[in-house]
Image (cartoon, rainbow, N blue to C red; front, side, top):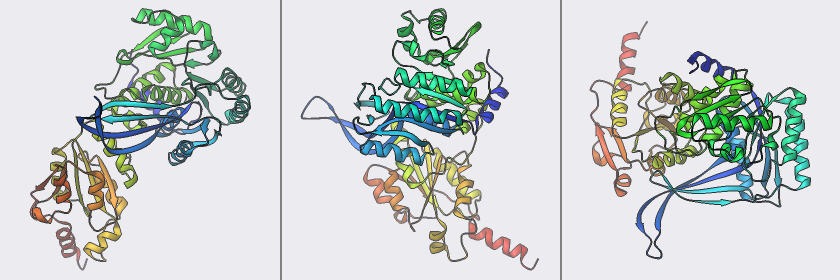
Length: 492
């Protein structure tokens, strides 16, 4: 039985500010995005033409960034190498506001990384760099000391096990003991077939295949899932299991309570990467915030549905979950992106074969002419990025009395429009550098420009894009509005 939406909204709200420690295998997710148009003359393999590259957080680090996106405060404990990838991971954690004081560097192990080569919304190749043997005794002891000291300061503990040797039996046992002493719930996303490693954990979140391997029983139907889950639950003596089942949703099993089967919520599935991390994050947030397990499972299912509708292991914010819950647009300012974030936005859109549209302007006082332009621009593609001049460049273009509205306020107004997907602020007098960074499929300008006057036209047409001129709405401009306001109120 699906929980009322009010209970899910309350779980989202109560989860804000919850303090959570994530312990586990920390990874760097690397993406190379490109296109495939030919086969190599050297070997029968496809040639991927490089377009862009970006790094992201994987494994336990992805769980932590998901928690931050949901409004929690996250601490991360684990191991990275003393190498460039380890330093990059630490930098990303800092940028994403994940506390990394308990992340240790080990010169004897490389940082675990996964390099994915993507083209036309498909993963062409993955290259893993990792060491799977258990961490050394000295490193293990240092990690145990860190997590034992941290657990009393947080509201709950999550163990994200990817089988890379960090979550040893002793690390898991130490985390459980510390959580029980402090009266905190502890969850695990498991790996392997020996679930006695998670003895006494409150909840464990295996997927269907992991449960089948651990129970050594089939898991093809609801009934088989329940039988296998009850066997494993009896072995670990925990409070419950949340079994993720892909297109079949989830099953929640608890001691002496009837099973709850939750149907999948995703409408379209682009990529299952990171879906398990999303489930773990949302389930933990809700539980630690005081929600019943049924509500937490429903919330985790909803968040997973949002995650698989996107490409790559990208964090899901509470606003996106709320939007999925209510089916109405929710604006929280996340559509305003810095120039450094533009490659990630573009890469993800390219991976989903989306047609990117770009337009730009000062947008000083938003009026009906602007709205018509933006609506038309959005109709020409699948994703609209709007570039706006910062205050200094507006003054350079329009004079010292402009802008009337500050750049961040202008950005927020534009980003709140349904037809606008992203807004970014640029400081140059022209958007040429920004156009070169985005390389839109369609470049849009108002019809008061002649085609040869459009900045970036030659660049866009050079790689097969096109320029569209949208007719302007006569009688509407910021200058006209200012003049009419002054005339009407002059002397009052």
